[in-house]
Image (tube, rainbow, N blue to C red):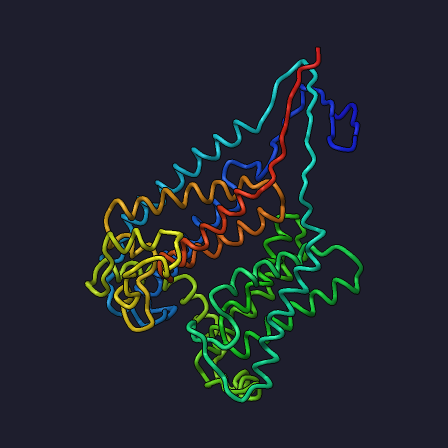
Amino acid sequence: MLDMQIISANKRIMLFNKKTFQTRLAGDEKLIGAAGLVLGLYIAAAVGCAYMAIAFRWPKTAFGFENYIALPMFLSSLASLSQGLVIFYIVYIVFRLRFLRKNTTAASGQMVMVDVKRRKFHFKKYASPLVCVIALYFLAKIVWFVSSKDFTINREGRFIVDKFSPILLIVLGLSAGYEKKKIANSFAVFAAVFVVSISILVIDFTREAALPFGAMAVYCLTQKKRVKTILFSLMALMFLVLSVVGRGNVPVHSLASAINSLTAWSSTPLEIFETVVGYMFGFSIIQFTYVQNSLLGVFELSDFFYAISPLPRDFYANPPDYLRWNLGEYIPMGGLAEAYRASVFAYYFVWVFLGITFSYSDSVSENWRRALSVALCVLICVLIFQYNLRTTFRVIYIIYGLLVFSVLKRIRVRIVE
């Protein structure tokens, strides 16, 4: 029960009755927070989808790997995956308990005075400018695409997005979700995000078009805004479906051909659903199983140390050839499969590192930082199976950057007799 609250220029002092007082200073209060739940739920859904694809040939997954995997082979490969998941949750819970124990005060029969130092950084001051700057950056690239006659494809194989785009799009979505000013401003922010997403969709046909609305949904979820969470989740799902189904159907050489490609699809709604579910879930586990039981691709322990290094490629005199890691020209092994191929140490190290990362993601103080870190953890769930390990660890290091610069509340507790 709150008995007194005094607010001064630099600090906030609160006097509580200790019979009912229990405060957790930052982050999620539950033992297993959002980031901890999402990996387990994703793997459970992916295993179920992969089992159906192998046993019943539905849904079909990318590259048809399910046709080369027998059901006993698939079931035996789940042993290593289960061991890794157990290690992940052991590490996750150990670090969560350590955090909650340090940041929980509970007693009875006395009064406590809690001195909370004010946070110095207020994200809401920068939300609108961030939306404007990032939206203008992408809109400038879109205008260049529409007006230019000579189109240059970047090394990611796209016209608009590049390797930094996922982070910019996530920040764009979180900034838009944080916007709390007038309705006109909110509508303008929503319109800017929508224009950026739809332009990336029709020009590049990449799943990154769904990232802004996905980030907005994650932020609204952390704020317990159920209606907005459902709305933005449906928007993100719509962009995800359109990007997966439309990819590669029609070559895009102009804005007109990009728009025409949207009407060139002949897929039924059931085929669209099968494509999205099979690719996002079933393909992850099937790809991992396929790498375990094939000799395609080369990934050694030296490659593992290079993959987890935060140093740019230019710092290495003889960097590894990425193509050696692939199962085919455009088919990576997947980060977890690469670690498994490198050594047992590398495989379990990745699970331990993920446990620590996801645990601290649920312990970030400010809501916007926690929303961003949880959104990146959701992205990691897919990256760790479908993209190379170096890409996954780049995202992990961004999460640690959020943790380093997170301004945690400093608490001093005094017993008042």
